[in-house]
Image (cartoon, rainbow, N blue to C red):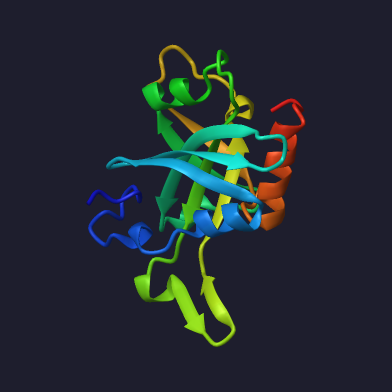
Length: 167
């Protein structure tokens, strides 16, 4: 089975534990469709808040050097970037990057208190990622650290989409 983790496919880390699924359920949403390829996972999340829909790309990495004081940087190939930021979208798209520990043994902790993950995910609306120069083969984007994908973050995303606010 292909891994949803770019650069970590030999260890299959992201195939063990779907934090995004539990975050979606906690935020009042359901994961209605998922497609996994060698480098990415795409899906649709539906919410009970006015039935909004969204799509986007989920990336996964152990490369902690990408995380700076203000943002996480990620590079997208030109073709993938253009598809993600297409202004003719009818539904909003997000880019999310899951940052996981380098040591697979540190990814999950199971105890009497519950199951916790040492990973965290940062996101940004595709519409906020800017454009790409004609002569560039890739684009480095910045996902703000304030855009942490947690229960409150997911609820805010669903509220924004559901209430028809600008995304």
